[in-house]
Image (cartoon, rainbow, N blue to C red; front, side):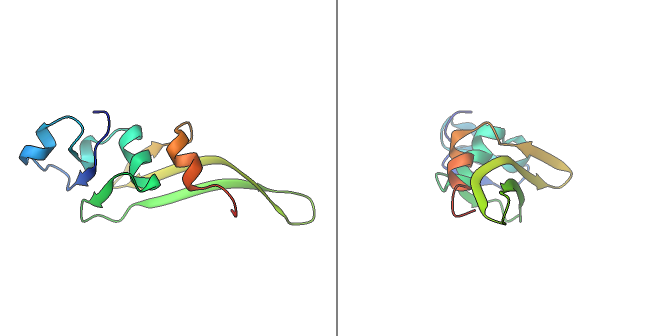
Length: 96
């Protein structure tokens, strides 16, 4: 899987989910697919709500640093750490 344009429902077996760079079922998505979803480069057509947690630092005086340290996505007991994917980092940049 390289560049899915859509994340489908878990267990989906449609034609699009069998073609590279088209769609992927949520339960088979890798970190790169989830990073694309966070960046708006892929659609969440899964019907599922994903929880996104981002960790950033607050400088002395209470000012956010604008640097995101960790971005984690959770769904159904599964966790994707997308912190190393540039698309995810861009999605959670300043004014964070």
